Image (cartoon, rainbow, N blue to C red; front, top):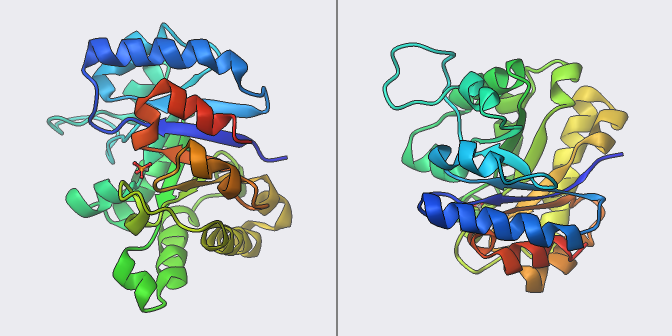
Length: 249
Ligand code: PGA
């Protein structure tokens, strides 16, 4: 059976002291969340080792990793470094990385491979921009991202991957996808997985929704059969809201 997951993407927010406080609050409140729900927080890189010491119930994720294994890549952080810091998950291919830092499907594929080689679970992000949805290209866009980003993996490798569908027009805008729009795309992604890796693999893959998810809309989004949780940006910066979302299951 696939896992229910609520993951917080803090993005470039919170200094170290603020991050420690938030992580402590989330860990404390996590005891009120159903044991069936995996909770993950993904703070900025420099917070990871300190935050790791505070977590038990809540798992640790990073927001990115390098597309190369090691060497002269100033400013980069490798998947191996993340693993050595006790990180278990890594967000890869977020739309902000794709659009502001030029990450292509092939770069993202290299990151996914390096994450897996280092026993990290990739949280692979995909999603269309508004103009693509308006012209009806959203399924094709997501299919290409998923095929080029993930479908070079073996079945064994793929079984470690979590997918996050994040329509770019819903990220940080306050306008979430409707439950029907989310379900339709999640079902489509699951059908792509079934076509490539088989029905069992498709049924075992957690597909999260991301984009203006908050306590007030999480329940109706998570009620869909193919929506297995959320990747939460803005609302993950307040422990109450993040835990409120996790309690929506
Ligand atoms: P948001 O961001 O919840 O602030 O819309 C989601 C994300 O980018 O992962």
